[in-house]
Structures are given as structure tokens and as C-alpha cells.
Length: 263
Image 1 (cartoon, rainbow, N blue to C red):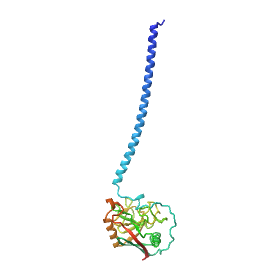
Image 2: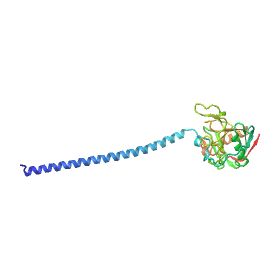
Image 3: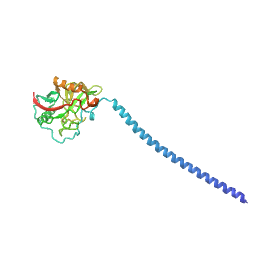
Image 4: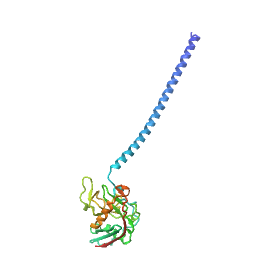
């Protein structure tokens, strides 16, 4: 027979055991919550650290890269989508033509061969006849790694074009690419800018003032005369606004008039 004293001790023990179980359960729940919170915070920190690291890594890498053009091109026009028709062929595809750019730094005379770049020469003849280039600025100069003066954008910011595209031409004339995938665009070369995609040339072009290595994807369609090259080199010697190796030239260049005639 259980005495009242024994019964009290049994009840006290059961109560203690229940309290212990509740404490243990509470501790387990607290640990679970802590683990969840810690895990969530860890994920957030890792994600944040990853984003920060990537940002810093990319920035550091960018700082070490040679100058590149938008879309890996010497000047990308805003849209590769044509909005107008390419002009009908109106040049003699067996002849040579001269494009004379009268600038505020002198005349740059460019010899173009319609036999090797017929559609490019035809486009420049068409645009020049319409005075498309008259009063436009050469908006970009590069003086480090890539050495070009870029012109032909009526907007003056690298985003403009004639509303149509012309195909790439004469790329094989640049020779076989080296191990780096590049060929040399020699000083004096005049070539088409594009968006980095095939067949996206428009009106923008670049004048090479010093031998430059680029992928062979920019139509070389002309060669500057000695006086023209010297004028462009003087502009390049003046540097870029703000002292950077890429941007608007300190010595602003305006194409006052462009005329294309059969040589």
C-alpha cells in the first residue's frame, strides 16, 4: 500500500520529469531556430560577399584590360536592325574613288577601291552626295592599345547610323589572324565600324593613326593620303579629354564637308 508521503514524492518526480521534458523540448526548438537563423544569415552573407567579390573582380579586371570598343567593335551603332533600304548600286565596281573629308584640321583624302568593297564605296558615295557627313564630329579617339579616330555618326555620340546596314567586305585582305585572333590594321587604314556582329556596318568608320591589332571583322575600305594621316596623328598627339586613353579628342574634329568622286 502506497503511503501519502510516497504518493507526494511520486507526483513531485513526475512533475519534475515533465518540466525536464519541456525544458529539453524548448532547448531543441531554440537550437533549431538558431540554426535556421544562422543558416539564413550565412546564405545572405555569402550571396552578398559573392556579389561584392564579383563586382570587385570584374572592376579590377576591367582596369587591366586594353581598350575595347562597345560590342568588341570600333564603335557600335545603336541598332543593327535596318530601317531603310541599302542604296542601289550606282558606282563603277571596277573603278577607284576618292573621298575627300574637309575638316577643321585640314583635308583627309581617302582612296577607295570599288572592286574590293563595292557596296561600302557605293554607300559612302550615296551618303556624301546627300551631305550626310557635313557638319558631323569625329566623336571618339583612342590612344592606348587601339589607335583610331572614329567618325561618321550624325549624332556625335556613337549611336547614330543611316538606318540601313551594309555587308562586310574585303576581310580576307587583312591576312591570316595570329594566335590571338587578331590582324594588323596598318596606320593609314580606313575601316568600317559595326556592332560586333556580321553585316552591321552603317555610316560610322575609323581612321587608324597607328598600327592597331583587331579581329578581322571590320571592312577595310580605304587608305588615307600622307597629309591626311599626319593630320589625324596630330589630333591623336593632342590626347583625349580628361587624360583618358579613350574618349572625345581634346582637339575637336569636325567634318565640314565630304565629297566622293571617281578617281
